Picture 1 (cartoon, rainbow, N blue to C red):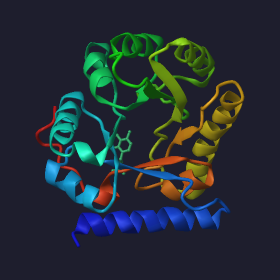
Picture 2: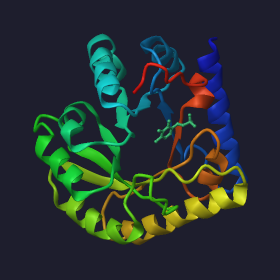
Picture 3: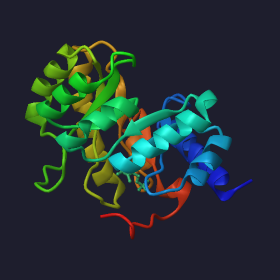
Picture 4: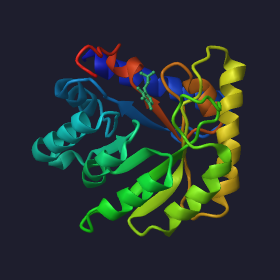
Amino acid sequence: MSSIQQNIEQVIKQIHTAEVKCGRQQISVQLLAVSKTKPIEAIEQAIEAGQKAFGENYVQEGVEKVAYFKEHHAEQNLEWHFIGPLQSNKTRQVAESFDWVHSVDRAKIAQRLNDQRPGSLEPLKVLIQVNTSGEESKSGTNEEEVFALAELISSLPNLTLKGLMSIPANVSDYQSQLAAFNQLAELKNKLESRYNGLDTLSMGMSGDLEAAVEAGSTMVRIGTAIFGARDYSNKK
Ligand SMILES: *Cc1c(COP(=O)(O)O)cnc(C)c1O
C-alpha cells in the first residue's frame, strides 16, 4: 500500500475518533482531499484508496486535472471542489469544470458563476466563504453580508446554496480553534432554517480537524496529512 493510501486510512480514522469523542455519528463528516500542487499520480493513488472528492485552489491547474480525469477515469465519478480565491476573470472556467465552489464571497462572483454555468450541467453547488476572524487580509465575506449574499445565491437558478466555509486564523490551541469554528456553525444554524438543502459546513484542515468536527463540520479539507508537504516553487 502506498503512503498516500495509508495516510487516507489514517485521516479517516482520525475523523471517526473525533466524531465518537464528541458524540457525533460516525461518517457524518465528509473527507475532501486537497490535491493542489500535487501530480496526477498522487490523485490516482488516493482514488485507489476509495477517495472520490478532491479540492483544488488554482484555476488553471484545477481545470487541467478535471479534464484529465474526465477523459481517463470517467467511470470514477469524481467530485471536484474549487476552494481557492476566485477572481472574476476566471469564473467561467470554474463554472464549466467544477461541481462545487467553496470560496464565493461576493455578489459579482455568484452572478458570474450562475450566468456561466452550462445548462447541460447540474447547478453548481456553492458555499459562502466567511471571514470569521475579521482579518483584513483574508478573503471571505463578513458576517453581516452573509445574509444578503445567501438571498442572492438562492435566487440564482444555476447555483445551489449548500452552506458555509471558513479558513480561520492559524492557531494551535484547541479552544481558540473551537471558538472560531463555533462562530461559523452558529451562522449556519441561522441560515439553515431559511434555505432548503443548506447542510454543509466546510471547515477543518490538517492542523485543526478535531476542533472542526466538534463544532459540527460536515466536510474537512485535508491536504498535507494525505499528500505530504507542498512544493510551491513553480507557483506564482
Ligand atoms: C491548502 C488548503 C487546504 C488544505 O490544507 P492542509 O493544511 O494542507 O490540510 C484546505 N483548505 C483550503 C482552502 C486550502 O487552501
